[in-house]
Length: 256
Image 1 (cartoon, one colour):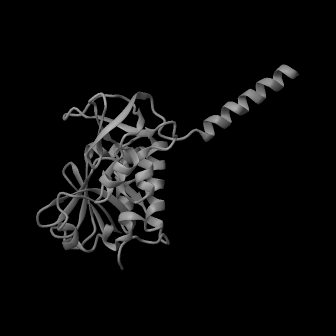
Image 2 (spheres, one colour):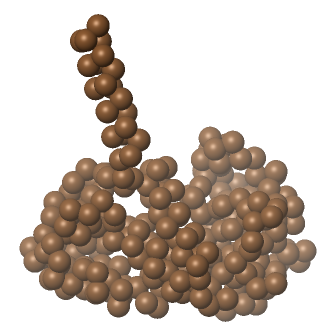
Image 3 (cartoon, rainbow, N blue to C red):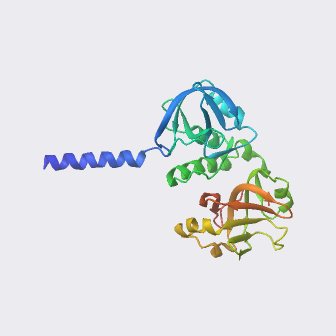
């Protein structure tokens, strides 16, 4: 009986630890001291490695905030692997000292960065998005600007941001398929209105999440990505996390 009780207690302790474990605790990919800030989301360590902070896109204040958080600090790198990108940078979530909170989450919580949706681990992605959502709610950092989230009906405002990573909110008026591409149209004029494009190769991710694209008609969504296009602005969705479904009563972040 005593042995069984000990086993139960041990099981509960393990379960408790698992439940309270901080997200984004991927495998350690080394550590080092930050010797310099390269740009708004890259740092150089004292061993000459260049580290790209994954999971975020920078805003006007990111580099300054990154300098305040990381200059001269000892950091731990965590990611599923340490394969460098084509520029030789090692992508990772960065943790200062023994902290369980990544620098990316800190930047997002301060409104000094935008979640990029590139991290596919469900718990980690949710944690980063939650940090951003709280900053939006409190209008911190870049979210204090009413134009930080673009209104999908204002295609000219969006078109002016060609080549930039933006967040757009609006109501999907129609869903159309043309060849291997599905279009979520936010304007009645398909050639000029804002649209989201989703290729056939991305569909399995939506299907696995139980989302039928046709069901998005007349739904409000928030989408993030790089603004493309010529006559009409577009965001090409390649990752499920780029699209958020908004409730009917959820307050919008865009101007009315």
